[in-house]
Image (cartoon, rainbow, N blue to C red; front, side, top):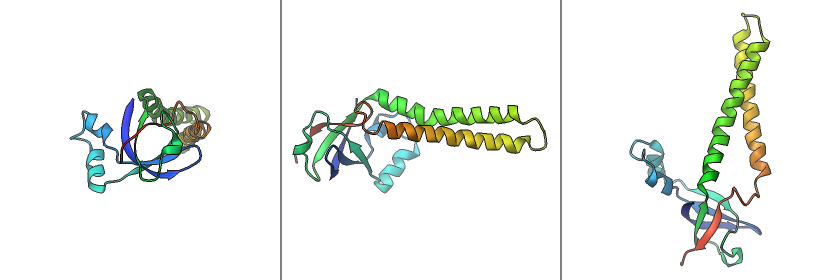
Length: 151
């Protein structure tokens, strides 16, 4: 499980919003020195707010500006990465091949092939968006509150 410490910035009825500074992934990554993400995060101090569903903690005891530890299973990160990067790429390739197979005239073939690629990419992106919407309250794919840290 990937763990991250954050601060509560908003509280809803069924979830809380946690602000984190993404550091844990950068510290464990082998490409830390050669990656620009770590450098940009250090320079800008950019934070991210994440919607977190209650896990092992009682959400009623959480208050604003409390420090908490959230966690997400590694398989969720891997599957999510494959979904958001690989699926649009595959649909773009499929759109390209389909457009190339349907259009036989050589003078406009490249234009239609490029259009097929863009339509395939858009279709893949819409599928990813729909999947995200359908799983927005799925406890298996959301970060969970692991513990509340002392103030």
